[in-house]
Length: 622
Picture 1 (tube, rainbow, N blue to C red):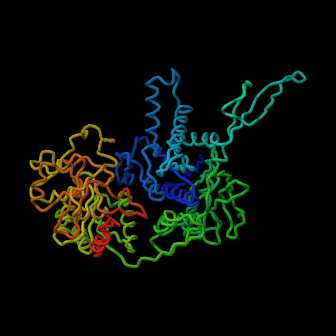
Picture 2 (tube, one colour):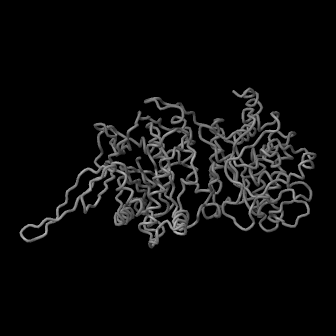
Picture 3 (tube, helix red, strand yellow):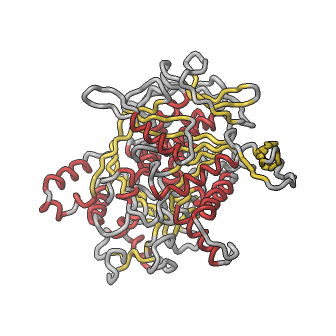
């Protein structure tokens, strides 16, 4: 197993996750099987109870894991399916160690950070990195590890120490024998190093084992190169201090990925229009810069920096990584469009050397009204935005997302903040379609109901996700949800019977669940190519009350998708509307650049008048 560790310094938010994902893309383009691990040093067990305003989106995996949004980037970039174990937190590590201590597995020893916590971290990494995530049998070739936070954070110290140990334990092992002889009345220390065979270790004592793992471990440090506005000069001093701090902790970077507003003659990850340019920066930087390559050298493949003429650059950091299954280099095409997610199609469709992909820059915009609760931090809806991008690219369109705070649409806002109220409604009326994503709590719910009502009455394409589906039924007279009023006499939406009211973490209905279509004659079924069922990821505590389904369907709503029990409503449609769909699940989590979510694709097609022709074309599942 080969490990590529991505750490960060100077400040947070430099793009370690995108850098790690992009490195994985480059390695995958070379024919290697890649897996990813995200280390979050916070004490939370997972990201499930964190505020979207503080931490951004909570990404949900097939197994129900509530994880950091960077794992969403990994899945989208690499087209893999990760598990909750691919997200390591301090809370998980300490919980596992303390559970062992309670079971008496440490045999009365004093449990300490070193070695017990660090050993648990190493064992977790080595165990998870061997699990295939691409649907194939056998272990991956490379594991890309992202260490969250910045170097010097006190909470990340155990992880840095564990990774330092890992760097020495994953390579060629050398066993050193220490022995003493007497010479001229003095004791002389003899150090004799030989290759160590772990299956048949020598019996000579005493001995000390020195493990050298540099053939299998590469550290990429992401740092900041600020540009002073007065003189316009790049300053490397912050990066120097960051590297010094990292080296003091026992880790020496092999490569520096320097974030800057300007390009430079280094492995420079400068500011770009969107994250899909980053793999190209690593694979094919401008001709004046060195290139990040995997090259063959006497049977060994090395990652390093090479000049534009193919010769080794003077600033090269050469890392000897012995890739055993390298097939061919993918020459990624230069990207000319501002929407560059199509870049990944080359990786999904072809591994043939020299093949290029024609990319036509989209010129038509489609305006999408995003009516949400957490628009103050757009990362709260990161996967939704990516799914819209994937769908627009499939239609040769460029998305223009208009963010609308749901509370600004409410009647109270007209009195308190009339300018924001007027601007919100003007934006909503100018959109080609409306999307209401998930959320928790009653803030802004009335605004969401008004947005859904506007889309329904004006025949504007509408997609409601999770809470966005539930507010579609709350628009009826006197209808309410026990989430917003526990004593409501008309609980159209209520708390799931199996849910916990005392514990918040990991108690929702989570992960991939099956939805059965009740009829093939519905838009959603046709978008999923007439499949009998669909497996999508869920994250909710409340659901539509099955006791009121008959009454709701009398009001023209049709529940065309239900769970396997037939009592849990999953998909609703308004048959008299061109495209009015609400789903209890989160289709955005499984959208990919080359395979857009069916429902997001349907929303964009309906917004541009292409839905009917698309459905007719794919009526037979082609």
